[in-house]
Length: 318
Image (cartoon, rainbow, N blue to C red; front, side, top):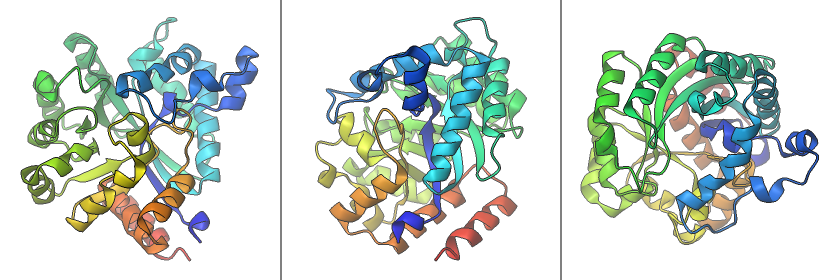
């Protein structure tokens, strides 16, 4: 039953989800160890090391287009009907491409398949200079509503608290660019509060919010949706064991949650596999996943008309 469920994916990194078979073909080598994280990493920083090889491969127009198109194929096989795919275009300019060329190449790859609707979320990075992140905001504005839907802040949260980036989100608000922020994953639940204060519509991960009732109350009060990625959370050691993931407790507290893969290749996961694991550990039913997918649609960076179409598909999915 769950295998046939129509799915929504809101938290998905392009460079963490590259096609392994094509990567093997490109460099004529077995790349699985370089692309897949261990079931248990020391921390998020160790997990992020698995992005080194993908970033080296995604430096040409051809490769950006090809791997984006292959991701669409993987999503279609997973019965995903809408996905928001995020990445930092600046990280793909090391061989001379402009950020505009990077974004246009990815959009070209995503548009080659009509079976699934997609939007891009453009990531600022915590370790980049303020000047560079402002450039990322400006290029996001240029492509907003032209295949790009929102901004994000990603990277090593434990080393760079949200408080360092208030100016960036002030600029984003002035430009009326919606955004989500990675918060409360490797860092403190206090980052969730600052993300809400900045005006985030959603929170990437947000699992540390379970540690503080005030944060839970603020999430509910502001109608914030959490982009949960359970397998990734265990791998980065943000959660010690899968059965201790707070997803069920968050739902019981009336927090709006969604289920996502984060990085399909790095975490060796699909939404289908994630649903099966959640069902095994927490007894979630197909109806539970339908509700989470409707949560995802309502929180998506889409027009109301687009949301209603997707909700109709999910509600009538047998």
